[in-house]
Amino acid sequence: MRRAAASLMVMIAALVPWAQLRAQEHLDFQKYTASPDYRALIDKALASLPPEVFQKCPSLVSPPSTVTVAAPITMGPDGLPKTGAWWQRFPVSGCGNDTILNLNFSVRADGKIVVTVALPGTTRADLILQHDGLFYATVGAGTRAKSCKAFIVKNTRSESYGSHDHPTQSPAQGQFQPWWESWVVTGCGRTFDVPMDFSPDATGTQITQRSKDITEP
Image (cartoon, rainbow, N blue to C red):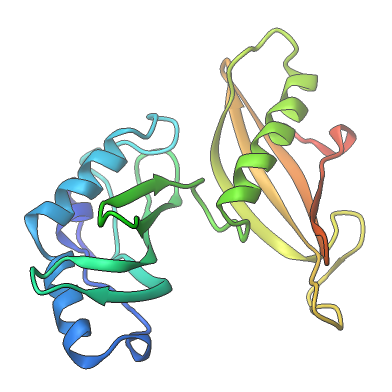
C-alpha cells in the first residue's frame, strides 16, 4: 500500500477473469492497460470528478485497482481493443471521502473507446439504473434541503438483499433479486444518506426512495 498522490495512476495492476480472454489477448490487453494512452484515458476521466467525490492529497491511500470484463474483449493487430467492455475500480481513502471510483470502458463499432464515469462506491446498479436513480436520490435530498439546487452523489453503499424496510442477508428465491442501497448525497454544505430500494422483475427494475427514511449523519 502506497501513500502518495501518484499511486492511483501507478498501481493499476488488475485482477481480471482472464478465462474470458484467450492467452494472447490476455497479454495484449495487459500491455494496453499499462500504456500511456490508457493511463491518459483514466487521468482525464478522474479529473472530471468533483472534489466532493475524489481529490488527491498527501495522505491518499490507493490499493491496486481491479478490472472485470463486462463483454468479451478482442484485441486488434495494433494492440488496441476492437470489441468488448470492462470495468476498472479504484479504491481510495485518506482525502475526505473513502470510496471506490468506478470507470466503465466500452469499445464502439468504430473502434473508439468510450469511458463512462459511474457513481462511486459499491452500488450494484448498472449504468442505466444509476442514471435513473440519480433523479430519485437528489429529489429525496431536496426534500430536506429545499433551498439547495445542486446535489452530488459522493458515495454509494450496497446494503443487503430485500428492502430498506425488510432487509435480509440471503437472496430471494427465483431469478429476480431485490436489494437496497444507501446513496450519500451532498449539496450546499449538507450530506444525506438516501435509502434506495431496487426491485427487478421481467419488465425492468423499480426504484423506490422514501423521503421519510433519509438521514443526515
